[in-house]
Every structure is written in C-alpha cells, then in structure tokens.
Image (cartoon, rainbow, N blue to C red):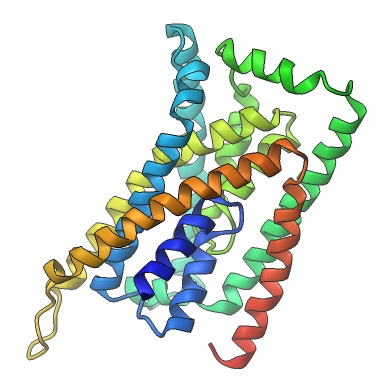
Length: 302
C-alpha cells in the first residue's frame, strides 16, 4: 500500500509542475519510510522509470510531427536540446558543488542527500517555483487575451505540425532554469522550464513539448546516478549488519513503476488541459500553498 501511494504521488507530481521531489520527501516522512535505504532507492528509481515511459508514450506522436518530420526539423531540435542540456549542466552542477563544499562541508554524500530532504529547505523552493509559475501564467494569459479570439490555437498547431521549434534563445533559457532545479528539491523542473519558455515568448504547446523532451534526456542520467548510489550503499554494509537483499524489492518496485506510469499519463492530460486553457497560474497558487503546508509540517517536527 505504501508503494502504491508513493507511485501515485510520484506519477502525478513528477509531471505536474508541483515538484515530485518535494511531494515524495513529504510522503516518505509521513509514511515513516527511509529514503536513503537501498531498498527505497530501488523503488524510487523504478518510479522515475515509469514516469519517463509515460512521457514518451504521451508525447511521441507530437514529437514525431514537430521534431522528426524532416531532417531539418530533427537537426534544429538536436541543436537546441544539446544547447539546453549543456546549460543545465553548466548552471546546475557548479551550484551543487558549491553547496556541498560550503553549507554542507564535512558531510558525506549520504548525509548531504538527507540534508537536501529537510522540509525547511524544500518549502522555500516550493514558494519560489510557485511565484515563477504564477507570474508566467498570468502574463501569458494576459497576452493570450489580447490576441485575436479563436485564431491562436489553430495557428500554433499549424506551426508545430510544420516542424517548428522553440528558438535558440528560448531553449537556452529553459535549459539554464532547468539547471537551477537540480540542487533544489521543491523547485519544479517542469514548472520552471515551461514558465521560462512562456516568459521568453514561446507558445504554450512549444514550451510544453520541449520541456518534456528535455526531461527524457535528463531522466536517464538521474536514474543512473540513483542506481549507482543504491549499489554503492548495498555493498557498503557495516560488518556484522544483515546483508541487503535488493532482489526481494523488485516485485514492489515493478508494481510501483506500473502505477507511476498510469499516474503519469493522467498527470500529463491534466497539465496539457490546464496549460492550453489558460489555467497554468493555478499550479503556481498550489505550490505557494504547498510551501506553507511544508513549513508547518517542519514546525511540527517532521
């Protein structure tokens, strides 16, 4: 039952712009689970895998028309995706190194993972993401209201089907803001990147498609990192402690992956509907409220 709840939370929160890491951290604390244990890391790796496959299934037909229709369209997408991913690494990893060698100096990698899970650090990140989503959503909604009524959706669809993409500058901003999401749990990746696209003038559809294309590029790297950390922890068992049997956890992990896949598909339909209908800012309001709740949970001692 606990794995099922985590799968639903991960599937919904990973793809909605509300930060899966923040929600999973809170859910683990409320359920009394140890997120640093190898068994739980295995479950989380499989949950991430399930949501990645839901993104591929949901967006494949759109990506095929937008990015793979011609060799020119594929080249344009590849250049922009590579540029955005490079900026993600250039922005994100130096910040992680800086934090680890200043604020968390002297702590082990495992301790740093636990410190990043502290609710008093998750809450401000949720509030920051909420403000970004709220501002971008209200601004885009205002701009949409000024456009010719009824003409924009069809025009945007024709552009996407013609193989167009976000601009080089828009891809750069989306990649850079994605880098800020790496070290801060609670700073929603999808919320930040789509908001960056909207604020730099990308259409709703283009920002959404490119944001989740970046997710498919980034997610395998994150999964591999977590899997490596899990294997290292499993082999670093103290002398005299019972051995860790990861094989016993595969049934629960596969069970969770299946339900995170289903929850991910539902989340993507929800996100697309609200984004296309000018309700993006409501996700920002939710993140602001969630940040306040997380602060309160921290005050209670979680």
